[in-house]
Length: 259
Image (cartoon, rainbow, N blue to C red; front, side):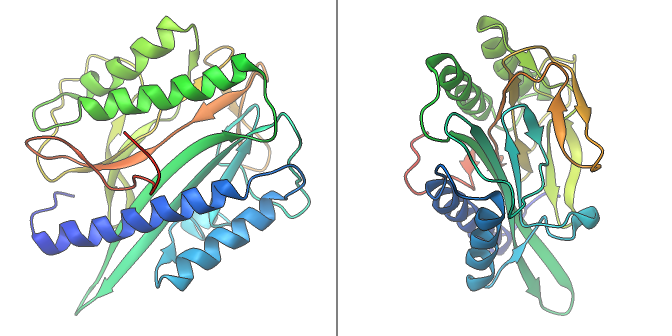
């Protein structure tokens, strides 16, 4: 999807702003003893109270509002009232908010965003994994403007992973965002040789995933949760971006976040 009107831009901004607010509020609830199901219920209520729709719930039959992935889980973990957070865990929270406009025909505008936070006290090496993964997201955003290639984004992310000897998740990556949520292009978090160039008005999600161990991941039997094959911890950060001729617009920037 190419955004061409001021109305479309404002609608994407509304969805993105809400997604950022919900993610920040939900992440602030993270503590020892809270369940992932409670986090999910909180996020869903906040999205619906704002007059929007949880993007993930029902998408390809996903059963919840947020994805919660703990420790060796990379992405797409399913919330559960019986899954309680423990001291020393790290948890990735990934969510989407859909602002739906129905004026003759239905049109959805989506904000998609994620972050990984510590539960209680974690060791410095694990905290560095989180910090560096977020740093790589910002590096990818910095080069995200019209005329840049997908390799410019992937390369900026890859350089930080290589410098710090992290595994890069290669089976999943960023993507375009449109009315049906996931769209082309697929945005890898490493260089592929792609010469595909960004155009003004594109809305894309950039989402690096770094592992403390190797690159390889596998899908669990629930059909959703992706884990590292070596069971080493993983971190995941994501923002939705509007591409312009100049500086990119970070649609899902959280209220207290400085980029």
